[in-house]
Image (tube, rainbow, N blue to C red):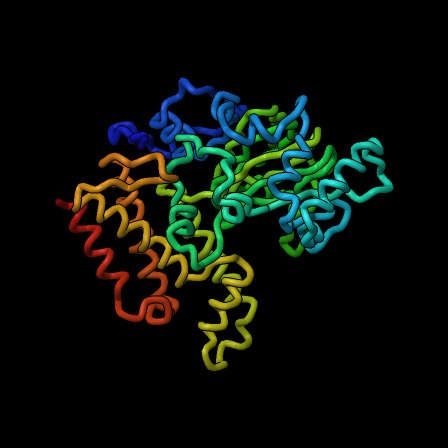
Length: 399
């Protein structure tokens, strides 16, 4: 059965009036979707959601035994698969060395590591960024919480299976595994639900991380206690069953305090699409500056877009395709009085679709202007479809 997720159009706050975060709040299921949308998504504030949100997930019941990972169930379900595993003791640029491993071998390692009391002479291996849902679509694992129903990124990838990608992940690893200091891909939101185990988070508000850059502008890899003295940071201890919401552009570092399994999504919607777009613009200009001495070469703009895609994960053309897909879905819903369905469970009300279209109008207008200024409009938009789409959005909003 579908569930309506709707926002009250009269309650959109002025984002500048949201204030600063003094502490990371904990909320429970009494918070409505509209309240979460206005207080946390629009204001870009972190929070922790109580265990009520995941207590009925299949993975919460089946993947856990005596408050620890149920290795035999995991072996039965996924033992024959291949999973990405990071070595937490080996650095590769600003991340960790990652390689593929048979799941069965990883579980054997984990059991042995635990049996040996997490002996520091053994490697510290962390299964990360595993597309479990995509790889095992018939295995019931979890249902996305209503608070995260407006997820343009996964809406786009689920509708385009030929791209063979999504931003829905499972993480699992023994006590002591960790994730280096970073902000999430595309400056997206992320949520992380602990199925079992505890995590420690350090979070920094946007721009606070600039105090941790070296002379070349590179961020630290691993925050140490001496560096925290000069920072305004937020520390969260996430318990089993809780969901951590990380806003756009908040850099963070995470440690597993126990043997831990978590479900994670990255996502984008009308509340943070401007942040995502501005980040993409900034990244392209960095690429252009880096290869400015080659500006006279043939197809220089095309090469810049290729470099942008390689370094950032998305170029202007794909970004335009992405927001165009979402805009057409919302226009169809408004004009045909149809439903936009998310994760086969939620559908958006009229106010929600209007909010999305207003956000898309602002961003699409700037995409067109910026692409023209950089002489890449015809490269990303061969038949002027961006202007046609913008015209359709404006007409819909005015009507």
